[in-house]
Image 1 (spheres, rainbow, N blue to C red):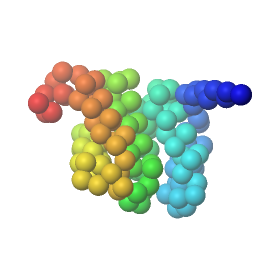
Image 2: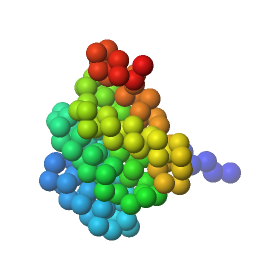
Image 3: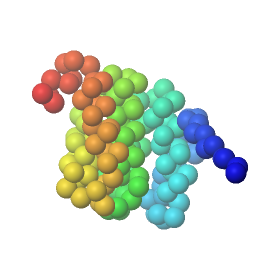
Length: 134
């Protein structure tokens, strides 16, 4: 009997132009969501430009079609961003809340990763920013 072990590696942050193209292509053609997902996770975990990460997540979270895997991922990536930077824009927080609400109402619309992202936002935003969630 042969066992195969799967390993997971966090993707690197890609250049901003590559990420932007991957996101645009995925929003135009759902068959191209996988490269956009890798690009989003890579920037959320490794890019130092919080505004760019938020911009990409907001674009995806506000434009992706219902049921797209990218919706829940956008919320999760905003959670990663809050964890890394300790802050998010009001617009990013509002989007994360909206995606999490949609996930609670209909997991086939937005998957549960949006809920995980909102949990991270609640946990990792700086104290003064987090007061709004109490």
